[in-house]
Image (cartoon, rainbow, N blue to C red; front, side, top):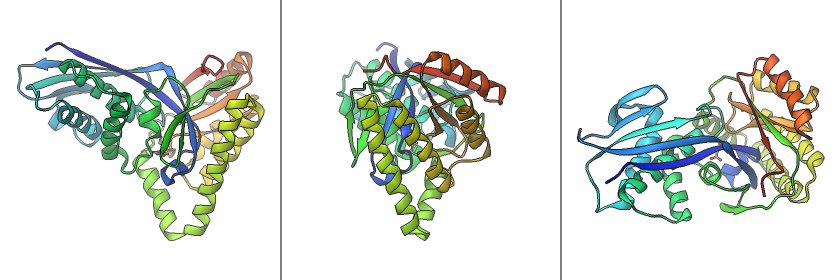
Length: 312
Ligand code: MEV
């Protein structure tokens, strides 16, 4: 047995978070420069150990926060069984924050699963890896759409529609700016809140989800046709609908406005909401630099940029 390694990355949902859970079209981008790495090294302690996000200790004692990682290890072990060995020391390391809508739970699960399989020398198809990751995500999110599991290991933009994942080739240009509000957002809580509204006020919530779905498919067209101005308009419209679903909050609204005032073609919250990050679309790097400066001055505690032209 050797030490296993796995790598995934962050993701940004362009349009369609929350409505994706109800089967409507959504589109997300992998952010390849923001990596999640995991190592699985066989140990002689006899129990899995974890070192992640400031926690060091037995995996079994790692609490709710790491439930997805525990599930990731167990689904990976089930996959390799009956070759099961004794225990691993698992280490994860990310260059992006957790609980900020950037897909860290799916990215960590995906990286850990890859690391454990690698330690056993067992291969898996990308479909199998996706399914294993999404099983771990069920512990974290409750009802994951699959968008995060698919995007955090994808080479290119991911479209989810009617439960099916596909990849789009883009003619997109411009730069995506990502800014962190510094507020932790629980996706499980946000998805639960939307579901509660869906149960109690179905016609209104269904209408909002349907509109988000329409914006999701329009955004796919925009990316394929290189219509960045239109994409910005659709992102702005999506933010209004997400606010109506009550998954935005004042800091996110403020950062979205700062980005727009600084010249963004469009801006919105990204991911589960209730905190976390916003995404803003800039026409080019020069505009992106101005938007990033303004967002930093407005108190964003992490700001990143991601060129869209490089993604095919
Ligand atoms: C979370 O990044 C995106 C949500 O749509 C949940 C999901 O798709 O599973 C809120």
